Image (cartoon, rainbow, N blue to C red):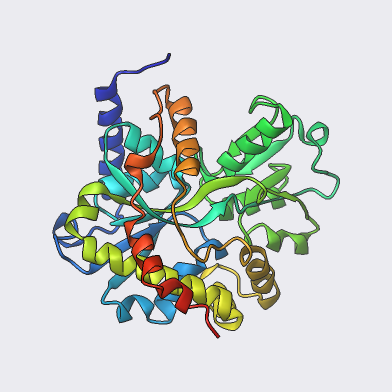
Amino acid sequence: MRTRTRPLLIAAVSAAALLLAACGKPAASGGGAAAGSMSMTIGYTAIGAAYDDLYVCQDQGVFAKNGLTVKLTLLNSSSQLFAALASNSVQIGVGVAQSTAAGALNGVPLKYVALPIPHYYVEMWGKSTLTSSAADLKGKKIGLSSPGSLGDASIDAWLAEQGLTDKDIKKTFLKSTPAEVTALEKGAVDAIVTQPPTGTQTRAKGFKKIMDFTRFPAAANAYTVKADYDTTNSKAVAAFVKSEVECLSILHNDEKTAIASIIKHSGNDDPTLAKYSYDFFNPLWARTPTVDPGLLTKAFQAAAQDKGLDPPANADQYVDNSYVDALQKQGYIDSLYRD
């Protein structure tokens, strides 16, 4: 059993949170959202169509309709997601659960309140000579945004499936998805792992899709709050989850509106790429974004192994499905899909 000194880890996490605040990340007024506040900042971790639920909620006024004043903020990487939550720079964070699970293991209570995408949703794009075989990719340089990112976790899932380890490829961390594209185009890496339409745009430069990772179940886009925020601002969290399930229904029911938001927010205004992205994500977006404790347990196990800590026996203590469950029992979710 591997253990490390917990106070040192907590100090490191606190330092990361302070550094994030010093770098100009937005903070709620007064250093955090007051109890009962209906204003919140939501942090997401990468440019791409995976966050079209947020884009649509903002563009279509769904947050406002449910009494929320929301600011969406793009964090530099998945590694900053927990620090942003811990420092109250964001009240709700969304990204791969593994990155926030590490913080929870260090003693900061978190709650996962919605899981709209329960699979890895990234693709590998690279040189036209590459294939998806393990033998072909062994030893190749794979561009990723940051350690613990969705792409990093996806690669680890694929390596485990193939009976390989991260020593069998050369992970290259480039800090951002735009930097991944640049590195691929300049020949600094052999392939990159990103969500559509970021990697997809490289086909215009002669690169090809090598594979995607959607076959691997995961707590990928997990909406997370601090436990104390969940308690003192339950009305705001309930309004957010209600908005989320409505916007998921818009994604499924209104392709035109969904694609328009992808074009507006995803960093690429090509309608063809936006349509590609929509078709990629539409089967992955959940209608009922219940958090699966089993997937969350796997995220905690991976985070614990990486940090040298003991994982929890199960992740139930970190799950709050009460908001989704209430909407289900009320028949609200079903009502969104009736003709």
